[in-house]
Each structure stands twice: as structure tokens, then as C-alpha cells.
Image 1 (cartoon, rainbow, N blue to C red):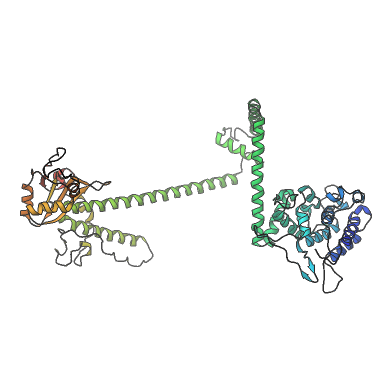
Image 2 (image 1 turned 120 degrees about the horizontal axis):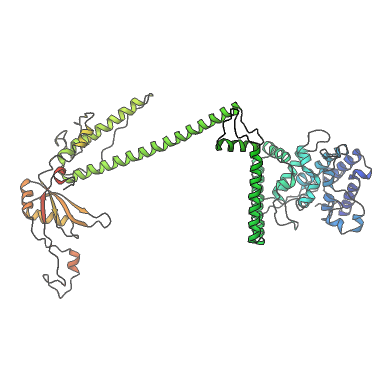
Length: 575
């Protein structure tokens, strides 16, 4: 601290204060208050003009000021121990002689002692010639260094801190013997957030229950914290409480484990039996207070007896009143309604998902029919789907009473239009090729979508479309198209059926020719042997082999070309 005032003078001031703080020493209330104010004035460096320099204290004088003869310094010094010094913490918790039974009130000088303690640990600033000496900041935690008084207080143990009886200050009324609540709460915040071990370096969070043993005091402290402390202080206190709670849980687990190790199997079995017996005895005592029949002699059910047992355990009469019964029924009704509402929401959500999945399956079926050659019905189906969508939107608008803006126009479908697709609205008069739901001549007829779904697949497919099987797995669509185009005529569209995982050809596919004559020629090619070898395999042939010679006998693939039939004729299959 400051250098101008010698530490010897500070030791004299500390001892002079502690000699007269004890009420048994014969000092009056006015003498104690005057001494406390005098020491505060001395610590502030008062009476020295504008250039104030705070006095210097020995490190041993700080715990001596707080604990008096119970400080470590006095315990090992015969001269100090014989003085019977009364520490500042003891002065803060000095009980009133008017309430000697329970000690629920404090002496009037206890408020002044707590005020001095709060000033020293929270507000004291070391000054040199009127300029405050800045405290260093810890780079790890970002917290400022404690002053000497605060450091000495935070190093005290929980037993030593109990001397100031903080719970009486926190819960006491604002009268002459009620204590200093605001000052005490600020000191408690410092102890909870910055408490240290006895070595003065290691942080050691201190539980609030050790400082405030009563529930009323803890509740009063929480109220003060919410009303007067800043958010940063509240967060720091909560963090410290969480750390202490976590340490308590770990200690309890360790104690439990060590106790379990010490106990043998027989002892554990006896302990379990004792717990069961105690539980049975408690239940028997509760059942003795519960009636088994009502006023009319009708026996209560097990559920009713269980409810009455719980009521007796809580200290209530076993039989509920009519108002309590009505309230219970009302609560049960509310809970049932909530459960039914949640169940209905879950069912509604699952139904929505199923409808969305069904719609996706229907769209995929429509795509498959397009590929199968049902070109005559594709336009009608698309028109019916669009009509059904408009009908659903109209029903939704009717269901909602509030007016809604008109639905946004659907964007054009990104799916490419097949070469053999014919728009049923304009017969491909409008160019380029388009789907029927993008046609300007489209006419929506409501109620025909369900009928169209039932009639799907019964129309005859395009006569220019054929089904080919017996193709090799390695063949590509361009090779099939070239093979049939050279033999029959121009191929408009080629679709090979592939495996989902490898994307290789299944040996089957659909071909759509430009004319009916070309399709008939392709059907006549059924039974021909397709001699096909991929270009990659040709490159890998050995130099000594000829084109006709192979290392192993290759299986001959016989083509089978048939006309695409309706689904009624094929029994539900697409070909």
C-alpha cells in the first residue's frame, strides 16, 4: 500500500480498535462506533489535505484485523493472544443482549462494523499523493486483483466467515438492531465469486449455504441480487453456484463409492432390508390414517386409497373436499383434451406425409406411362391433374373465411416433352412442343380426374412403339438406335431399362419409330441374333487373336421384338 504512513502506526491503530470492539471490555455503543469511524478515516488517509496517501499495513495485520485473537498471527504470538482482541468479523455478528435466547438480533454497532468491512473489501482504493494505484488484471480470468483487505477476507475459511452471522444481516429488518443488508450482500457476492483456498492462490468456490445457513436468508439474498445487482454480477454468482453444486455432487459420489466399497455384501443386504422395512412401516402408518370405506359403506378403490395416502404424506386430510375433487376432475379433463389434441396433430401430420408420398407415386406412374407409349391418355391425365389441383385450391379458399390473394401461376414444367407426345388441347398446333398444362387452349373440366385415374392404362399404346428384349448388358442406347435405324428406319426415341445401382442395361428397352412400317419391320426382326461387342473390349483384345476367334465361347443373344400392349392385356405390367 502507500509508503508515507509507516506500518508500525497501522499495527497500533488495528490493536487499538480491536481492544475496544468487545462489548465485554466495558466499551459503550458510542465508543465502538467512534472507534470504527476513526479507523475508517485513518484507512482513507483523512486529515492530510488534498494529496492523500493511504497508510501501509503489514500482511499479518490484515487477518488480525478480521479475526482478532483467532487469527493465525495471534495463535503463534503470546503477546497478541493475551490481549483478547475482538476481530471485525466478530463485531459484525455480535448478538444483542436483549435477545439472548435465539440471538435473532444484533447489537447496534454491528451495522457500523459491517459498513466498515464492506468499505475495506469492496470500496477501498490505495492512493499515493491523491492518485489511485491501479490494480493488475489477471490475463487468464480477466478479473482485477483484490486489494489487501479483500484478499485476506477471501482466504478465511467457512467457519471463520460464520462469525459475522451474515444471515442475521440479510434477513434482519431495517431497524436499529436489524443489521446492514445492502453492505452484507455486497460482501457475500465478493466471497461467492472470489473465494480462495488458505494458500491465497487457488480459487475455491464457496457454497451459499455455508454463508447463509437458513432458507429465509438465501431467499432474501436472491431477491436483493435480482433487484440491485447488475447482470454481469448475477451471471458470476450463478456460475459460482453451479461450480459449487458440481463439486458437491462429485464429493457425494465419491463418498458413496467409498462407503459402498467398505460395506460387504452382507452389510449391503442388511441395509436394503432395513430400508424396505422402514418403507413398509411408513406405508402402514399412512394406511392407518386412510379410511377404507366412504360414508355409505362403499369400499374405496386402490387408486383412491393411493391418492389419499399421498395426501396424508403431504399433511392434508385423506378425503378431499368437493371443491378439490371438482378441481382435480377439471385438471384431468384439461390434460385429456391436451393429449387428444396432440394425438390429432400427430395423425394430421402423418396423413399429410402419406398424401404427399401418394402424390409423388402417382407422378412417377404418369412418367412411366409416358415412356410406355400411352400418348393418347397422357394429355388427358395431365389435364385432369391440373383440374384436380384447381379444384383442391377452390375448396381450400372456400374453407377459409378470410379473403386470400389468388394463387401464383405455376411455372412451366422442366421435364422434357417426348417426341411422340400429342397435346390433346391443340393437337400440337402451338409450337414448340409443350405439355397440356402449359397449352393456351387447355380447358379445365372439374370432377374428371378420379374417372381418368380409373381408366389409366386401358387405352391402346402408340402403334409405332415396340418392346425389345434379349439385348446385352453392356449395350448403350445409341448402339441400339443405330442398329434398328440401319435395318428398319428412323428411330424417334429409345429408352433402355437399367438397374438402379449399376445403371447397366437390363437387356430390355422401348423403341419408337417415325412410321408404322418401320415398327412392323422391327417386329419381323424378332429371333435374329445380335452380334455386339463393346468398343472397350475390342481394344483389349490380344494381338494374336483374330476378330472371329475368342478365348471362351460367347452366349448368343436372340432378339425378341413385340408390339407394346395395354395394361389390361398384360395383367398390370407395363409391357
